[in-house]
Length: 130
Image (cartoon, rainbow, N blue to C red):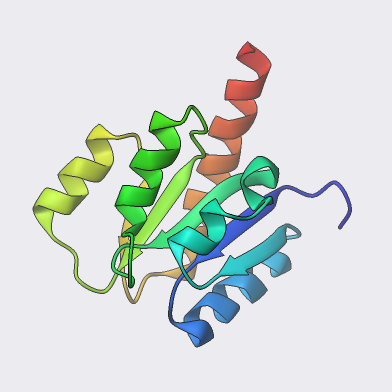
């Protein structure tokens, strides 16, 4: 898996986080997991991450707040937000701020795979423009 794109998963639900990590690995990608947004921000994982999957509601910083903070710091990572509590205003905010996908739990694994693929394509397209 050396050289495979890294997908970072941030979710305070350990079983879901590990399940998504297993799914990402089954796609042939590298996965790293974090319980909280702050843990991710204080890791070296940011520079390695090609796609970010984050829960919307977590203790501390929300997934959407994390995405916005990364964008403001110039470290925009193609992001997928997942939530058990979908709201139209959150979905609209996510779209305005460039989130790739906003998925309601439980989500279709095929839809998640499509979102990951889109995120990685966006990341690669962004790199080629540099």
